[in-house]
Length: 500
Image (cartoon, rainbow, N blue to C red; front, side, top):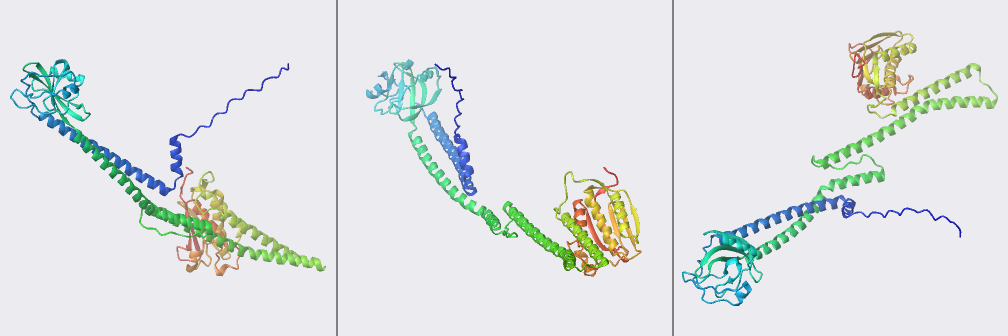
């Protein structure tokens, strides 16, 4: 016999737990549409309100009716004890089957119906003549033997035929049998019938109210969700056609109107962003076309000279190579400017923002500008000022302002650089900017008609505006404050004279 080890025991797989009723109901509710959920919730709320109102009404009416029956029974005048010998039987049923005749009270009047006498220790029941009902005796009725004159007990009970009743128990005295219990009952069947009819009426009203609530909820949901449907149609239209800028009508000032207004703002912003992107691409293509055309022309000239075996003169070749180098440098600067402007035009946040010494940035920028304008005079007056921003972006913004001043300054001109209380000003003494062109100076690729022959791409001032906005400041460019020649650039940045 081979000693083969038994296979390893594998733990039984846990049976998947079926979701309970609450989870299934929650899943079903979440899978419904918003319109269906609104209808369901409104109908459920109305149903709960109607049900609570109906129950409250039913219990209030029940208490009032039974209270009235008990009050009438408590205020009724009780008959005196019988003056003839009582003929009693052990049970109410036997007493009802063998009714005595001629039983009268001590004053000679007939004993009222729905009245019976119970002897000591609840041993026998005596009925008046012609009685049609007998009251069921309960063991607790023995407490009636301890009642005093004028006292009584009122309890809920029933007749032997099952009819509900309110029973009043008091102690009286018989001429022959001594003390006996006098039990007087009033049937509450009319009250029960009234309550049953009221319950049917309230149930009908509740069902009708719930149906009306469902219909009203559907109408309200349709009216309330109409702006949402319009918003959904607009979003689906944009997703299908990619036509940003689509808006929906706004009515009122409620939450739906605010949502519609926000959507219209977002759609308009997307349309403007796409328009700016398209214009940027078109302008960039236009600016790139000129240096690329010049490069291609020079390269074609060199290739043709090499293919035909007719080399160019050394001076001409050197000039072509220098021209190609300058065009490549212009392309490099243009691509760098485009990368700078491709960032979101919003203030930065996070680790990129640091405490920057603006006066030190201005000093380094002036040193670089002096190398680009060797014949110009720079007058610098800066005070310590620290801002919260991007050091590289702010330095490039100040350099662009100084480059713009160097470009338009006459030979031997003066450039004034001032920094006081967070206000940096750069003033040149060139031709200035015509008033009708001031609104375009910070636009991308915009260049004044009078300066299009000068080098540049028209992106320098756009970079200045973007970098200053990222640091939470503002920049303006206009004529000199004293009315003299030249332009004045003003940059205001929030900060303080100390690093903290």
